[in-house]
Image (cartoon, rainbow, N blue to C red; front, side, top):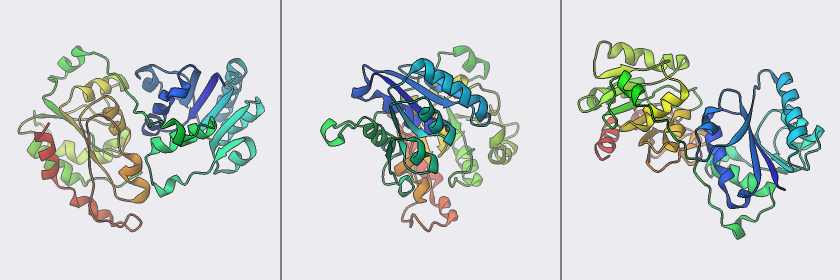
Length: 328
């Protein structure tokens, strides 16, 4: 099985938690390609090593199905592993006679079109998302995990050198803290008042940089209003391309961020990450924590993972994050 196709049509954080697994030893001499969501090419382009990939849109699935089938005809993979993808991806693998079609046994198409499915109860969150992905890859190749002793790798991302960008915004490497409070709402977040309290204290020693997209406005609006006209708080919302965000994250003193894709990006870049996480079982850092060399996790204590009061996020203290920041 020399030609391998790995598929994850999902968000940034999910992709980072998946792309790392192609670094296992038994894929070393194989020709590996990825299929990823349209617009996320900056992840494999800035990974070390770079990955080969095909971008597809889940929204325009008819066009994407044609593109995928055309790619399969040319590439002729020996094995394809679908970590997460809609039905038409499984169909394309079957229609183009890919010999080994692996994936999670869950939705109807996985039973109909895949021939090497694996039951996984990821909602139980007994291990990290990357570990689940490695288990699926091992299953696809029928590799015995106990024999190989493979450990789940971590994805390494490389930020472009861009001193002009930092100079443009008056940023000095190591002298500012990135606060990225926004998220898609897939997990409990720190209250906005806590972010504001943290910024009030942290800006005494560091410049604060707010990042986010238009979708993060519900989280950023009140923060921006509170610090309007404050020279110590700079908003770069909607002003950075993905690779520019990489540079800003990498050169920061620390990144304060909830469970979202930016946490995974910052961790993979080797930045100091102060990650804010929910104790809810399906949102738990045991499954979704950002993985990197300098990650610290903050989460409410003593919570029933299946019966969580959202107000528990107030328990994460500003003082604990400030202590972590001062220790860096």
